[in-house]
Image 1 (cartoon, one colour):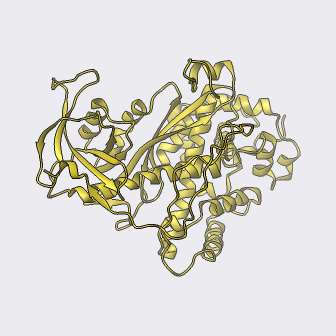
Image 2: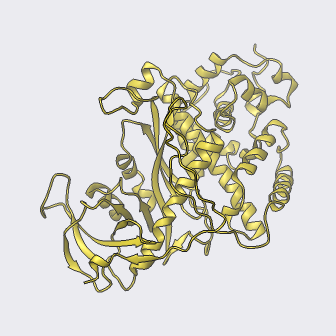
Length: 449
């Protein structure tokens, strides 16, 4: 009998266990019908925590991750199962179990009054997506798909696509959909509509469409979506504030036809730059002034900031997922979302205790301390968790100055060439960000007639 039998089921995951409790894990496994057929070294409960640990320590091997988790138990640290055993156990667990943990755990976190979280009684959220590279295997390529060049040739790794409904004020993922690269962002975004009720949802110009519009509005959500110039281009009624009503037709329809939707179009410029077009179902110009809605659109970038936390800090820059199997690759993506939500919960508690905006707390510092809590096995009881939070609060507080956070601006430019062997200078230097220029929002003069 393997030395881990009967012991590994009691291993936890440091500070993450405060929210991913053994009771929540047991409930998720029961809902998915995942049960251990016989006692083994790698039971399902342990494998939930191990899969989350793979996301928390993305750059470490299976052996290293296992050592991080069981290092405090000599009987376990001396006899770690091999990689194939862990892989088979992950296959028995499946992706649905981790997805169920995510759905039982997540939800909006912003308290009333938090800046950038509400607008006229509606919670602010953003829908966007990102991709994670998966290993180049026949199974991953066939099921997940990947980017291709102009000639239709493979141009990169197979990829897992993740689309999330993100709370802009906290970076918390309220809901998410995970599939292969072959599944488009708008299609995945439609799956999130039921979770967006009573929210104002912001999206970029890759999402407008009648099907998505109807899915969200029928679910009780309101929309603020950027659009290309060809979408809802013909005004049918000008409004007093310079915005106008227009029709968005079904794909392929050039004129009004059954199935179209009527929406409000807001066109504006920021600091004299390009004309930005926003579509919204908030039709009353007095109740929802155009300048306020135009100023809200920038909150969409908070979703990009949350993706930076996941992809750059938590996963590691340009890291590839471990799984040669598409189901396990999706399992990893769900694990990253679970871990990110737990880290966000810690940040929100620290911000509430210090009475500061959560954006001022370093995600990277919180990530490092949570990793240490796993390796050192310092968080095993509720009292030790309180001590961990007190210690983390004191260390985070040292990095904060007394004044308000200074505004920062960075140009959206290519920072690296496509290839390190390229002789052409494709990158550009960024302007200093110590002083942010004042930028004003003005309605596009062309519609003020």
